[in-house]
Structure formats: C-alpha cells, structure tokens
Amino acid sequence: MTHYFNCLLILFFLSLAGCKTPEPETELPPTIIVGGQNPLKTGIYMTFIDDSVRVSDRFGIDTFYSESNIDTAKLGYYQIQYFVQSLSGMTAEAQRDVWVVVKPESMRGVWDVAWRILPSGDSLSFIDSLGVENTRLIIHNFNNIPDLKIKLSLAANLQDSVYIFEQYSSDSLYCVFGNGTINERARNMILNYFIVEENDTTKYRAIYSREKIPTQ
Image 1 (cartoon, one colour):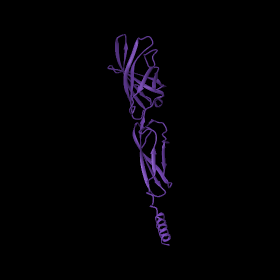
Image 2 (tube, rainbow, N blue to C red):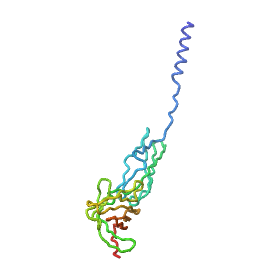
Image 3 (tube, one colour):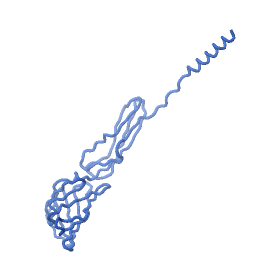
Image 4 (cartoon, rainbow, N blue to C red):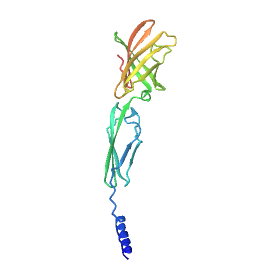
C-alpha cells in the first residue's frame, strides 16, 4: 500500500510540473526591409518609385506610410523616411537615401547654343542635338569640327560635371578635349574645351541651354 501511495504522490507532482503556466511571448516591433542599393540613384526628371521596401509583423500591419523631400527636377541628395505600426501597437521606422543625378537620357534632345571664342569675346548662336551612345552623350553638329562626333562622359558622383576626353577627327586634323558643368536643374550646360588644329590650340566656351539664348 505504501508503494502504491508513493506512486500516486509522484504522479501528482509530475502533473503539477506539466501544468506550469507558459510565459507570454515577448512582443517585437514590425520589420521594415529597405531592399536594393542605399543610397539609390534616380535620373533627373524621371519618375521615381521605391518598390523594394517590405514590411512585416506577426500580428499584422495597421498603418504604413512614408515622408520624403525628393525633388526629381533638381540635382541633389534626398531622404525618404518610412513608418509602420502593427495591429498590436508596436512601431518601427527606416530610411532610404536618394540621389537625383544626371543620366545620359536626361540630356537627350535639341539644345540652343551660344558659342563664345575666348578671349576675343566674339559669339555665334546655333543649335546642337545631344544623343546617347551606351553611357556617353554624343554632340551632333559640333560647329567647325567636321567628321567628329564629340563624346561626353558624366561624372560619377552627383553627375553635375561632364568631361570631353581627347578625341580626334577621322582625318586627324582636329583634336578636342575639355570639361564642363551642368546646373542643378539640368537646363543649362557649360563646356570649356580646346581644339588643336595643326599644332594650333584654340580655347572655346559653349553654353548649352534648354531655353532660347538671346543673340548678342
């Protein structure tokens, strides 16, 4: 009998141990994953959509929204702030950095040009068209340089600078090189460059604009 009573007692304590109340699970805030590159580059005047942000929470999402100061019509560095709240009331936030830069496609098209020959100050207004070849800008109808398509390279950072690496015409009589800048709205571009012709070097300045330049 004593042995039977001891067995019952052991079973009673084991049942108490098995009925211990589980501890409540720790609540965690929702998760925001900002995918892709950060900072992210987008071209000026191009539509910007950030479609690589993901949010999740085990209890479900109540609200998700963002705030940003992005102006895609102006070169610069911007930010997007993301906010999320779960159904349980927990919150989280994350940040995306965005660079609005000049891409070759941003510069494609017809430009009015004021050509200034320095240091004499003489000027000539005309029109050039800018095209795109791979990652380079191509200037067509570059005045006084026959048989030569001028190729421009954009800078790698905020891309507000352009470079003309040394290039030659097909008959090797002309060589051109130089650099320039693009304004923050990408509506104007200034090129300072040199043309070498039979060992005679002349410095030029071309002012490109999306608006008509008054004839001087």
